[in-house]
Image (cartoon, rainbow, N blue to C red; front, side, top):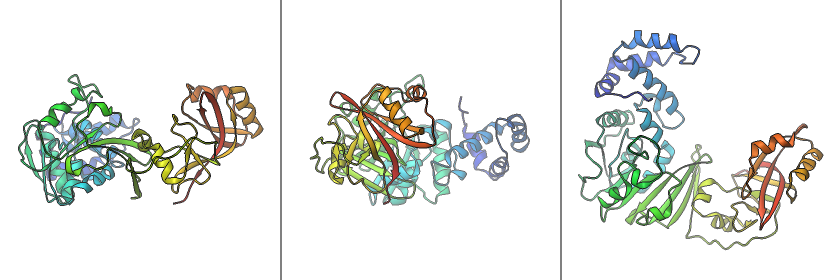
Length: 392
């Protein structure tokens, strides 16, 4: 169970004594093998009263390094870190708020707020949790921004005209993760109703059903380094086309596609390549739009794989070596012919467990390949491919 920080813990962690204790404890390995010795060392360094807070902070900072810029100096709770947007995602979203007055009504530890404060005309952050507010104040100071912070209920507006940003907790009253908007904290419909006529941006899980949010003018699906991270629901003047997919990478490159673009593609015989579109594109329902943009077509209108003779730049694509009807016997024969000993298995449209299939295939040989298993119409098909990273 995550450690429950108190206001006294945060005050100590922000003090010179706390900072020194954190720095010294950060040199400890904190591995399973050294756990007992490390805990004893933390108690000697930080004292019994604050040892747990110091130990938890060091552990959380290490977890946060790959997610949040400057995490080595931030303060977190375990739940807040888990829900916080990655810096790259928060920075992308904040781009829409440049020059505007913005109020983050569930600011938590400030992961979104610090990025908003970099670009907004005025940035306000509020939360009911005084511990998280204190952490947000510390974290903001670490990156050189100073948003206005106050304790307030997201369902009781304390600002009049600012763009409202919210990230409701996706857990029910018992603490279990929930995907039902009515179980969010605060409940999603109540949150929306609290700000009639206001421009609104609400971060949600990527699996949210479009029918549950009829008020949203735009739904944006965002991925980072190939992993779908979240959806953002936009309402009012800050909204764009109804559906958008944004693909971000840690190297700073990004691209986006919307349903304003053409989706005129039709199923056709397989080309020289199979392309598995980014998950944000798939979840946003923009596979055909992506195909039309890049001169690709569908293997089957109900399947998200695309095919073509020239893959888009900057993607991992699959060059087709052989293809034909799929059954295990013919696939096993094909893999033995090519001496495939290491196999990546991609599946769409078929009820197949890839790990169980790999065990049954009894692979042997020096070569490696990728097999794409899918269906065209009602017929299962297999594509033996070689995965390649396309420059760009």
